[in-house]
Length: 158
Image (cartoon, rainbow, N blue to C red; front, side, top):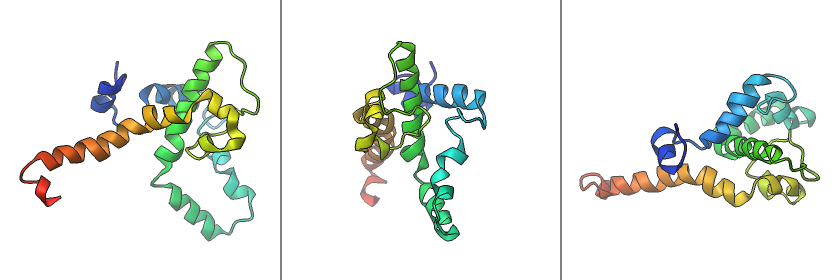
């Protein structure tokens, strides 16, 4: 299938998110629950910390500008993977772990937060690093530069 497996992911879908996870999180959950409280991409909830705190407007804008270039690998890739693993977990009939909130967003930081042990039962940090983020990082920042370095007219100029 399209983007499924490591080779097809490089050929069809070289992105931070796993295609299987995108299918569950975006195509199923987001589009069927658009702007509802169960929508995993509900911006109002995911950025609630900016509105809830007494943060000056310039600092709010700076916070948003900080996240603009990193949101895909920092938030979206882990969160789509969480929804995939949560879907697999519930299909298996297992009860959700204690202190796990299925509506709370997963980020690279929350994976390592000691208070989020329930999240780490659903999805392991090493899986996110190697299965989700690793292929794009390796392809974009190792394979492509290595191929460019192998070209005699290009490699020495890099």
